[in-house]
Length: 188
Image (cartoon, rainbow, N blue to C red; front, side, top):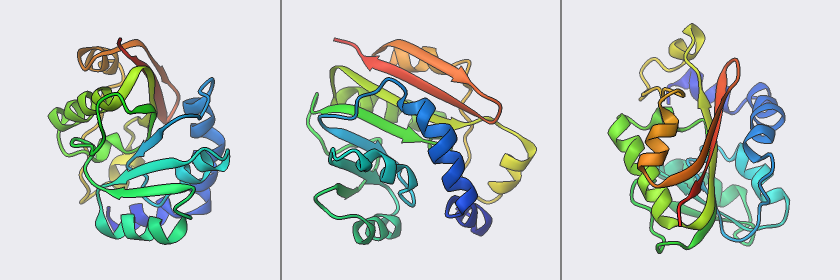
């Protein structure tokens, strides 16, 4: 991430937007229980809310420095931090109940890698498990904030077909002014 982007993702404005606006939509109707996995937690702002209910959360973070920062930030009894790639998750088939990713898909450098992440999430989810998340809708400010960053926008209108191709059913995508949220269930 460029410096502006890093600064914003650590700001109180972003924290409020994520915790009060995005996460309630992403988690609506989702009971955080069982094995919960978050992919791409970044600074861990969403992780705070995911782990607040008492269910331990595992996070997979690609960036080694961010993974180390998360290890220092959260008690290992609440949050298990794995430094790794969402397209090659180190978990057994069908071992996860819920996977969450918030506003990180656009950081994956190619749509083919996004599809690989979707397939990998499907592999680790138990049949009937939930994949839920969000990402940003393009705008001038969004594009300016990502100068020098990896930015592969996700077309919200095409996302249902992409998730279904990866093995998800009951796929829903809701578009809001600056963000879209999505949910799908792992097919049996």
